[in-house]
Length: 502
Ligand SMILES: Cc1cc2nc3c(=O)[nH]c(=O)nc-3n(C[C@H](O)[C@H](O)[C@H](O)COP(=O)(O)OP(=O)(O)OC[C@H]3O[C@@H](n4cnc5c(N)ncnc54)[C@H](O)[C@@H]3O)c2cc1C
Image (cartoon, rainbow, N blue to C red; front, side, top):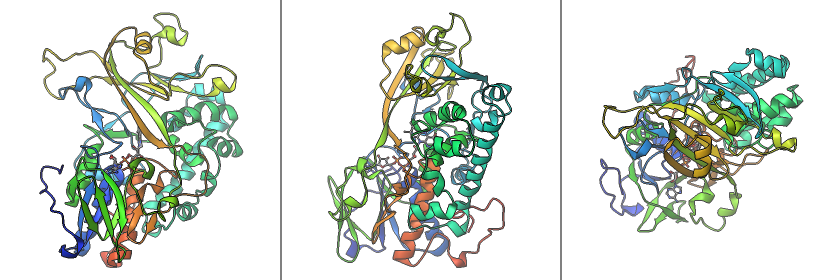
């Protein structure tokens, strides 16, 4: 199926095509932005190339998608996958401005936050949705963790973000391997240690790492601080200015695609990528075969079930992903059941519950979920007096490693549950310390965007990974790039972003 605006594709072999053709597999953050970056080069340098995007879903956005409560579009949609991006995510910020999309911040939301270890709350505080980094002035933090650990963490995260933002400068614009990029940015010591090892070796207490930092790693990556590498642990803490696009983050990716002028084949699964002579490629779907000058694979390879030539598939080592259960529900319960958390009936209970594995380390019970968050009351897109619409309900999102049963929901929300939706995702890679990554270029004219994910897995970083791939591909194949020397840089501007401002 194609997007409505695009004509149906004829089956064109390469030889009879008028312009060179690039295929992109996947229309998530990575694939949609790849199309956008190619289009930037077309616009700037008059590059003559056409783009086809293959997507097996019937929508653009991949792991970024929304649902409507009760499957009724009168309710404002809720993010089912990737929800938040932050100030330093410059491509997404810039895209929302360029595409006139409105942002929904979280600073103004109310409620208490608690860190639950499976048996008790270790820490609670008001105003939950501010980033963990900004809690450090809070007396309760100082009381429980002392002054030094929060301060050291803050400095380490600042130093990490200072290094990371160099990726938006033209100097760091292309890399031939994730290992090289990591060295250039000075982040290799972070990827080669666990979050616990890194933060503790810099003077952060074990208690602070295992409770507060781990609460952030578990909600963001469903992994414990002593399991995942320190770079993603740091990213979980660098949450300043968290926001999402009103109506859904997927709109950014849809705009990328529209701006690119690419043809989009929705509900079209690629089953094979075959080598042709002259370093060109054939894309094989269930129905058709088409030939291309270059191919960009923008999906986690092992989840694509694509067959690659025998010499190429071993290059991408198996990469396990976290199998995450997302449960969305609506409830009239103002807070979760106090008794579930061992409180007396009627007690005040946090409406954002983050978790730590610390209970298990001390031979206690594991939390039954990774995070439970009240996202605010249901909002309506139009007239909320419509009879069938339910007012006064809260939307709650639960992340867990196991399915959440109806009985569990009835207990925790005191039989006041309305709508429930369950979704299982292969959400993000399992992220142990490492210093080796999949190749970005698999062969001449064949590139792999998601090689970046074991380094950092976010919507933003997928747009950076695709920028790199597109630059490399254009140089190799067309003696061009997104920005060329003739483009004229305005890099001195403090808000310069490579790829946009050249
Ligand atoms: C529950 C959840 C919460 C998250 N929270 C955040 C967050 O708050 N902030 C954040 O930045 N990130 C978050 N992430 C991570 C973020 O979603 C990903 O890092 C990012 O969206 C990956 O984009 P991508 O384009 O690389 O991959 P995807 O979004 O997975 O896109 C790949 C696309 O390829 C398609 N595809 C696969 N195989 C084929 C095939 N054979 N043929 C055709 N098409 C194919 C898929 O259908 C898919 O649409 C979250 C993820 C999940 C699941």
